[in-house]
Image (cartoon, one colour):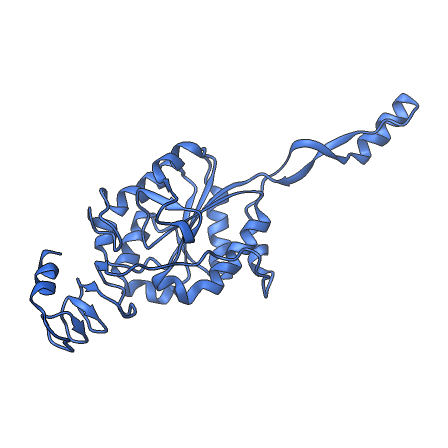
Amino acid sequence: METLKQRLEEQKEEHHGGNKWIGTGGTSPFGHSGYNPEGVRIGGQSKHKRAIKVWEQRDFKNLDNTRELGTRNIKVALRRLRRFAREGSPDELDLDATIQGTARQGWLDIRMRPERHNAVKVLLFLDVGGSMDPFIRMVEELFSAATSEFKNLEFFYFHNCLYESVWKDNLRRRNARQSTWDLLHKYGHDYKVVFVGDAAMSPYEISQTGGSVEHMNAEPGAVWLQRVIQTYPATVWLNPTPEAQWSYSQSTKMIRQLFNDQMFPLTLAGLEGAMRELTRKKH
């Protein structure tokens, strides 16, 4: 960052190519559309997903949970994660109990009961923006299915890696964040946790203090991911990137290791595997 400050003071004109000045192409660590394994992207679009910092103010869109699925396969897969219970106010007629009570009492004895619903509690963490843009439709379908399938669902957004805060609304992500630490104390250990993200980023975002692409994080992302995994034994990561490509990404391998190989592709088979794993783990 000190070198970038110096370049900004010294540079007087546009540059294209080369390995020093701020510009496009080439191997300079400053600019865009070139290649440098540890650069600061200024403008342009992400290509290699290796930038250490991104010098721009980026706006992300909220996912749409009203999108109708083109297939019911996602819902069918999610239904593997079920634990039915009757909780809440008695607002549903209990026909069997009403018949038995009426026969026993000799007059109409109406019995009510709470509605039967899926009692599984789910925390959903959604990576949004940047390299996740190509997967928006796929993740929206998952988001739509999950919000209709799980009555006890809480969701939060993050970007690339989990840090000290998350948010509920991408339009207010800069001034309406929630403390990750508070979430770990608010939601019980019986919650099932699902991360959704492509895990594609600079490895520094996971391993280093100050490694976040957007801010100077006080603790490495790996520390926060480990805290979640330790707090919630039933935790998995869903990755929309084809599984055959995971080995080409150092950051994907790092997160997969942190999650003890509990990373699943965002496919029908991957979802079924993730749901079986969450069902198997007890709090």
